[in-house]
Amino acid sequence: MSAQAAAIGTSADRGGPSRVGRLRVGPGILGYGSCGTIVFEGELDGRPVAVKRLLAQFHELARKELATLIASDEHPNILRCFAMEEDVDFVYVALEKCTWTLASLVDPTVGRCRLTPSLPCMLSTLGTKTW
Image (cartoon, rainbow, N blue to C red):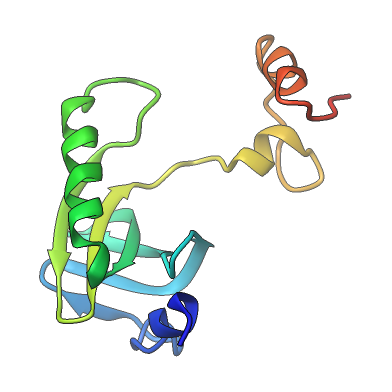
């Protein structure tokens, strides 16, 4: 079974929110990552958050990511991490929910475009077309 297939199965995946500790997870999906990671809309003690759900086998990776986020907690360009919860199958990391997506910053058809003076330069360095 693939990691993506193994990641499916909670009530959040089936359209309803689920609770894990202090977290409400889902039902909305914000994105997908590698190795079965899914990022859900969520809530922590009434605060909207992004909930990154990793397979339990990546527990150590989640702990390292959490330690890195805590170490850079006050940096304005790094997401804040609020909590980590676990169940038998998954590790859940509650992250600051961003107002903008990268797509909304780069592609005005996706959302409001907010190009900063340095963004076109940064994108051209990455080989991405700008207008």
